[in-house]
Length: 179
Image (cartoon, rainbow, N blue to C red; front, side):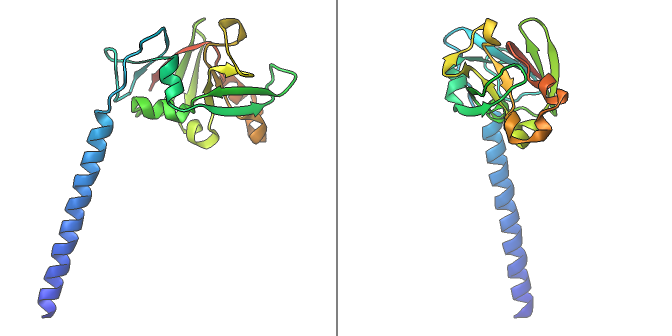
C-alpha cells in the first residue's frame, strides 16, 4: 500500500510537471507569434533589435492609432524644461516593449535629430515612464518635443530629479533599438 501511494505521488508529480511545461510552451509560443497590426497611417515609431514581434521586415512599426491602442496613461509632473506642472499622455514604455516582445536590457532611443540615449529596460517597470504623445491634451509637434517624448514621473520620486534621468528623457523619438 505504501509503495502504491509513493508511485501514485510520483505519477501525479510527473503529470503536473508535464502539464506545466506544456502550458509554458503554449504561452511562450503565443507571445513569440503574436500578431502586430500593420500601420495604416504615418509611422511615428520603429522598433528594431532584440524583438520577437515584428510587422515590417525585421522591425515593429507603429502609427498613432497603434500606439494609442496600447493604452494611454497620464503623468502630471514638473520638468526641468517647464515652469509649471505639465500633463503628458501616452502608452507606458513597458507596454511598448511588451508589444514588440523586447528581450534586451537596453532600449536605445534615437530622435529625429539623431540624438541617442540608452535607457535601461528595467526603468520601465521601476518608474513607469510613458512615451508621451500629448502635452496638456494636445498632440505634440516636433517643435514641442514631439511627436514622441519619453517622460518619467519626475515628481513621484526625488531620485528622478537627476541629470541621469533627464538624459534618458529623449524627445522627438522616432526609433528604439533594443540591445
